[in-house]
Image (tube, rainbow, N blue to C red; front, side, top):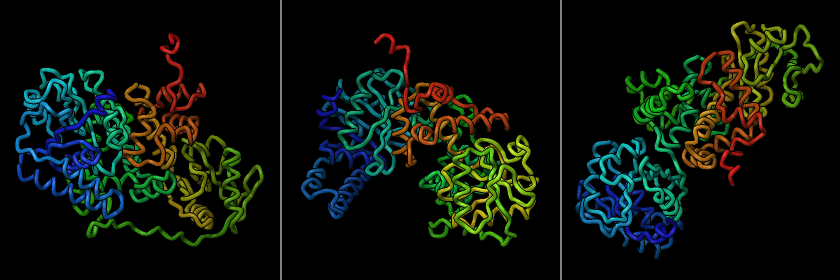
Length: 516
């Protein structure tokens, strides 16, 4: 397997669009001769010229030397006929349009012109490898090799074995991807493969929050960026991708897993897609765009309010209570530290997975002046203030002013079980735990795929371990108990590891270990 990867000297790339060009650029730079072909002959010359220009830019930036660039250019070979004899090709990669019948017809024809040991690979992003392979008399030679756009910059490659793919091929392709300087992960031949499956946790829960009227898209995005550390909020990301792309993925992954509640999409994206509110490409989505620039409203200015003392709920975790008290004591706010609030005090509570009303009712707090502050993230950046329907507006303004005096931006949201950041994170972690639970991918591959493919600050399982599996579990159980929605059902992977003290990133002891 490793020997095959080292010995690969010639490949053919069929399709010279953005993906085919990127794959060819990467392979030629790695010392591999690349035959480039396309249904349009003129597209091949355009692609070779484009790739040569990319090498020149890398040289100008000092990322490639002139000798290596010149050598890479000589390895790019135009090919007029995609179905020309290919006995000398070690690998053929198709990067044609995302249509099942088109890919099937191409591979059925290729099978007749390639050598006995030539491996066939599809760069499909959404079609099952097994379904494509049905067109072959020998489906064992086909695998998925899913690069991400832009190929030279996105280091991740999903390696997908179909149901009949020969056992040696995925490992051999994994070694080849490493030779090309990218990072491979083994992905299952299931809807969404690995990245698009694991990536459903964030947008589905963000859309659920929006549909419940918890917060507006800009509020959810700001919390996702500032509290969770995401580079882009979920609505920014959907606007960038375009709902014509992201909505079908949401629907496909959900239906492909037999309507699994954790993956349930929202009516919001279907309606907006039908209305043409696709995002940046149409100038209007969840945001509006002027000359391609997203128009984000300014942060609201906190209103003037009567200063009132603040009392942090004693039922809050002691460490969390100390953190919030310390933050407020550094301002001019009066902080009460006793066991009971005075009749004038604003009560702040910081539960995980519970609404302010449910928590306040359980502990006998004065609900009209009780508000929630999300403890996730340790109050180090943006603060989130949760307001329930029975709250006194004047008391709410005093709570907002007190939090704003810390110098941190404050986002005000409607009270609900769990707060925005909690629900987004719990969904991200729980979906990944579900993938691990079904043994669809190795925990390390899940984390690598999400970090590199989606740009999250941590892999979802690593993230769950960082926050604490018991906290993630308490958020989900609280949500499930208050909403009775099966989308918040904690994965058995999470429940078992929390109980046993095993990291979410670990497979742990398996039955097979007893025979070793």
